[in-house]
Length: 195
Image (cartoon, rainbow, N blue to C red; front, side):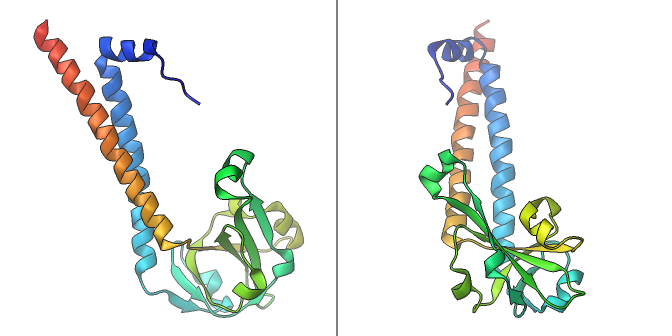
């Protein structure tokens, strides 16, 4: 945890441009994250394109789709765990990845869910999400089970309420950083006019 002691606040009082720089960096970072989340949220509001396993290989990145078929291998699912710090807040499982296969020629579709899921109960419903081509997201255990296979990732959306909460939190933090920046900019301009 970062401790902001009196030395740091004295430094900001003496050199308010440091506070302006910190604020601008925070605004830029939070705007970037919030806009990315908002863009993905808007994409997920469209009607998903119904697809079969045979069409998975030809899908472009960020296609919003609804998978209607495929053999779900719940016995091979991989539960990715949170770190011990995150576990205290969010629970043990960060994501669950379930391989779904079609014919021999089809790639292996990895359906990635947020948190823990009831796989046998979940496979009765169509999976809706965004197509990803991130090869780094393939768990090693699944790479070993499907050697030489092409993988496509279907990132299933979490709850829309949680996404809206993240967007609102990002916007609120951006406003807080704007206030921080303006506060130190006012101090800087006050110092310049007094000299």
